[in-house]
Image (cartoon, rainbow, N blue to C red):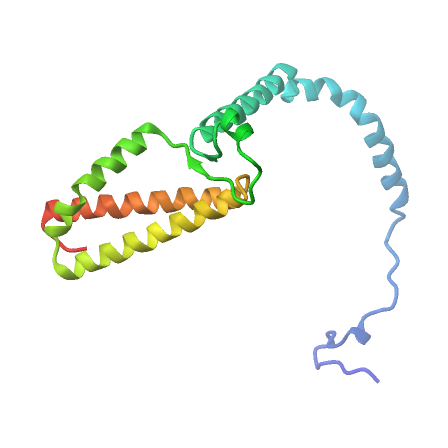
Length: 189
């Protein structure tokens, strides 16, 4: 027994008919489209060449991509942690921890040295609460740098540790720059 509303509409799935025959046979049209589709790629080949299948553009795109990767590797080599120079590595006995020397951009080193040399005077210009925050931040960053450098000494090729160390150096530069700006303005941090 099925339930129908007063208008005669469908209220449950049981009210639907079990099978519905299409008004016409669809298979001849489907077959014609399949046959036409099989012949279409031959006719579409000249169209595909006109749409952007130019081999020169593809080769230029591939060359540009290889160039970008090469530049990235070249730039990355100037800021990744490395061990001692090759000759020094040969003279050293194998150890569990390799001393890591951070090879960085000379501009970074100059700017870092400049900010560090002015830090004492800039801290003195800050209110005591701000000075304490800065000192705590720099101590935390210093400890993080030391731990990351030690971890990189054990696993120099670890990309995650390298990225974390770069981020830590950037955090330190941000703190030093904020201190400089705050002391110049005479404000706290």
